[in-house]
Length: 325
Length: 269
Image 1: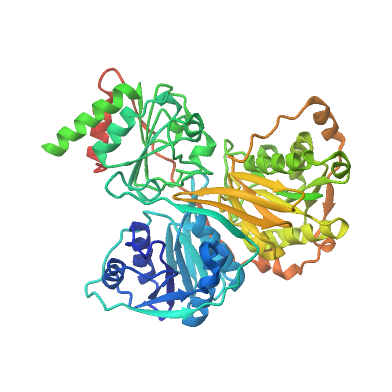
Image 2: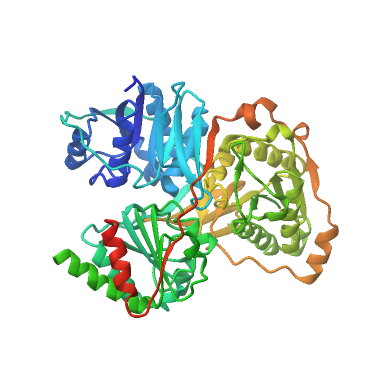
């Protein structure tokens, strides 16, 4: 452990921290002293989670109330982070990895002249003390390492890259406010709605450890996909085509949700470039398809040539039987 | 009205992509126009087409790319869609540029085009299929000091009121954002359906020149771009061991059981 200070931006402090946030807190701890940054009041549960992850200080931005919904714009949050970096004299900023956090990260890296790596899977201290981020690229065929050569590093870390772990001795967490003077920019928020995450249901697609995706081969019937996903506790997603057809609402792909689970199962998914761009960092890939020539088979670890409507229910029944035994 | 569309020439995802000396190999015979950039071109063309005849005659769409001469193929592809003018920025001093260096160079090109005729919009695709970073549009807006309207699944430009309004759906957040022009917009594949080139444009695109600019043509300090300006450095690039041949089971009534066995055996359930 060095005397580095690492700031972690928390996505959902007002409710409770979700796995991706706990993962980056765990990773941040391996790099130095961790402080959290929030733009809204942390809940009691969040504070307890922070304490058990060894975080003693939460820096809460106090924004001008005149900002209204503009407080949520990436440019605003980036200014908050930049101010927090200066206040804490921080060496690194860690964020979870999604389209919103990547925007914030890019903006803060720009404003601080800091090096940026997005979608990192690993982050360690290199031989000369600089941070080195690792990621898997080109449809999972290459591993790269990228050294950040600036004094301040900004890194977004993909889901499931590390297993969240708490500290042996929980600490007391205090919240310290800091005023950030952000002027309203030229962008107006005309409308903003946030959908509540229902944790009683399936795991979140973007953060799940197992993901089952239904493609065009489902012909619009997601019954077998849902049943199989339930048997293994997986999140369910679709391909872009399927969403365009109106058969399902969330798709995995280059322009949709990026998934990085331990287990990915594609059922009736051909494996078009667009889709592979959103699941290439999955650890184990399973394909079920009638067509043995489909591109997904090329990157699969295990594949079944067959009708998903037969294969998935049979697999689900066998898994349920195994779990009960 | 002038709209600038930065585009990227990327290795075809179906080709054997690789790194050499920690840089992505860009094989001239296996490149293509980044698919999402077609949506940016389509958005730009349709905005110009919505103008009245006089305004339209005074408008143009200019694509800009930062790459070697191979990238002319990508520029020509945009000519086939109806783009008026293409600029390729090529310079050895740009090799090794990171996100910031790339955006700085593109911003300088936008400024130069703006010196000729004011630029009203910069429209990009939301990501490139090689790096998948989707952060260059954000850097570009910051470099130009313009409002950023990124990841748009819908884009409406009011040319009379000179405003741009975008709709974006990012996971669980749905937003409608608006900003005055000029602005930087990045579009997703939901924003529109790119047109197919017609025969006349395909023929014309063959002969249409691509302008070549170097760093000397741009107002950008050489030490702030390329390898010397980069804030990150790829220190290692290694091919992963070839995937073991996939275990393939042909379902003859027991495919599901085989799948369950595989998952149980590998402790994945």
